[in-house]
Image (cartoon, rainbow, N blue to C red; front, side):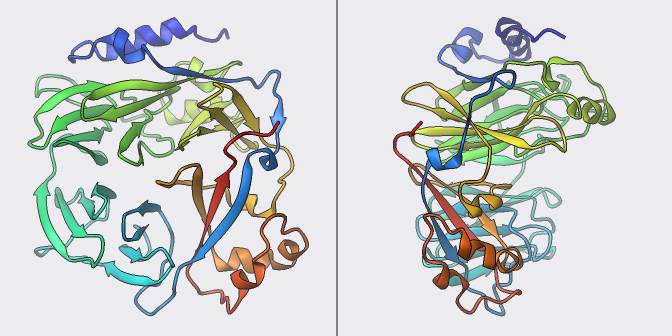
Amino acid sequence: MKKLPVILIFLAMAASCSRSSINERELFANADTITVDFDNPTIYEWSSFVDSISFLKLQTTDKSIIGQIDDILFMDSAIVIVDKRIAQAVFLFDYNGRYKTKLSHMGNGPKEYLNLTYVFKMSDSVVAIQDRKKRKVMCFNANDGSFLNEFDLPQFGGDIEYVGDNTFVHSVRGVGRIDRSTKGEYAYVVSDNNYNVKYGVGIDTYSKNNNYGQGKYLYRYNDTIYGIPNFEKIVYQFTPDGVKVKYLLDIVSDDVMDFKYNSVEEIFKLEKQYPFFMGEFIEMDNYSIFRIAQKRYDKCAFAIYDHKTKITYMLGGPHSHPFMTFLYKPYLTDSGNSFATSATPVELLICKDYFYKNSGPMKDLDALYNDMKVDDNPVLFFYHLKDKIVE
C-alpha cells in the first residue's frame, strides 16, 4: 500500500474543519514535519540525549498511600499525583516529596465526586477534578487542598483542559457536536467558559464498533495545550487565540494510519503488521518526543525532534542506563528539557543488585534505597536532556 501524500492528509483534515471558522491553510501553515524512517533507520542510544537522571521519593504515610499513578501535574507549590482507580484520590506533595494533603471526596454530596474522571489545571495554584457522572468540575487550592468552587460540564463529554482567557478545549468521543443538528464528527471542540462553541477540529473515529483509544488525548506543557486525535499523525496546539497544527508525522513506511478500518478487531490486526504512532507525546523547550510502535507487541521506538536543528532522531538500541527501564510511561513536566516517569519500590528492589553494578551517571543509589520498603509510595524519576544532542 502506498503511503498517503501529505496533501491528502491536509485535504482530509480540512474537510473535517469545514463547518468551523478556521482557515484551513493557516491551520497547517507553520507545522513542523517529523520524519520517522523505519526502512532506513539510524538508531541512537539514550546516552546521546540524557545528561542526568534524578529522583524524588514520595513520602509514605497512613494518609498518602498511592496505589497507582495515572497522571502527574506540576503546580507552583505542589506536585499533584492522580490515582483514579485504586485510591480514587488526588495527592499533593511538595517538591521535596513531603506529603501535604489529599483530595479524597468520594460521595454524592456537595464538594464530593462520584467519578474521578480527569484532573487538570485551572491555573498554577488551582487543580480541577472532572466528574463525568455528576457532570461537574470541582476546583481546589493546590497548596492546602481547600475547596474553591464548582461548575457544570457541557454536553460535549470527554476530557477537558483550561486554555486560559475563559477558553476550554474538550476532547470528544462520539459527541463532537458544533450544534444540536450536527452529527458528532470532531475530535476536539473549543468553547468559551459558558460552553458557547467557537470551533471544532480533528476527526472523531469513535463508533459502536470502534471505541479503541490511543494514548492521552490532551497534554499540557506550561500554558500550552496539545491534542492528538485517535489514529492521526497530527499534534494540535491550542491557545486562547486559536488552534494550529504544531507537528505532522511522516512515517516513511506503510503504517496503520494509511489503511481504512471500521472496528477494533481490524485495528489490532493492522497493528500486528505495521508501525503506528501510539499517540504518546512529550513536549519540552528544545525537543519533542513521539512514541511509535514498530508493530504491536514488538519493541517501541522514540522519535526525538530537535526544535533548533529541525532534525529527527530515532532512539532505541541497548539501554545505556538501567533506569531507562522505567520509560514505559513518561509524563510531561513544566521544566525546560526534562520529563518524568515513575517506578514502584517492588520494581526497584527487584533490580537493586543490577542497578548497583550498572548505575551509569546516577550515583546516589544509597539515598534511593535507604529504608525502602515494598509498600512505600512510587518513586519519581526525572530525565534531564542535554541542551545539545551529541551524535
